Length: 356
Image (cartoon, one colour):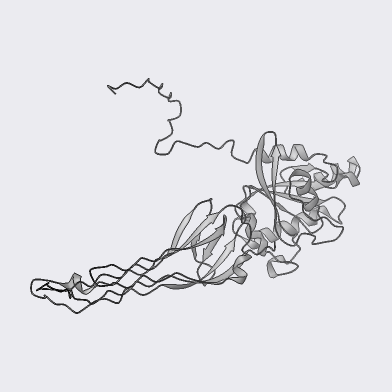
């Protein structure tokens, strides 16, 4: 399946059905009167976040969505049939942007979230609704409200707890394969990762999602290399792991480049917690690892985690640190019931009694 994280679509709701102009014409009925029914409501355009999707590739081949219009009103006071809503399924993490690509119209952050983006037009009134004591045979009716139309951009931001950043060939793919079930492509050349990759990490009874994005090079904010378009996928992460190749020319310069690109991108990425990991330590001796770690700390890193994605050395210690920035637990409260105050004892369950 191809990965696509941006798509433009054109959507249109359904127009309301027109009201009817009709009069009773029945044998042996001396006095008839107006009996034109109202028109039916047009269909809404509804977006729903569903599980199991992680790409917008379907919107490359289907870009126009139009809900059906409401049915016509009919005689004998029959109301036109309301049109069904047009439901468009999108992955969790999708944002709907206005045509300017800046105004966020909807943000789908959890499964099952439902947003009515365009409402269908209301049906027009039939002539029966205009009948009064002084207007016994009205012939006016309403045509129904028109449809709404809009062109929007869909932008997918993968939902992950932790993001991986670093220069190309820093060992991010090897690392995510070592800690999760991602199955990312690994090669001895730059930009083996061309699209973001997700993996689920299980560590000490905890579970979290990690995202690997293509490597950054200097000038990515101006479009160099693959650019910074995939940085949006780590905007929602709680923490970032910055992998630095110890076998590179200058680990300190590597950290400076990536930090500079994060700051240039904005979206508060430069303010996120970053865990600096000195990778490929299996290719260096302990003295070199200690020396580079000291240099990185002197350059601004709060702490350095020497690891090896190939052998697994040091990875458990790094994952321990990651857990410290994730929620300790997820609680599910009973719907409609407020959680107990801190320190307040839960009331004991009383046996049922017909007296209450």
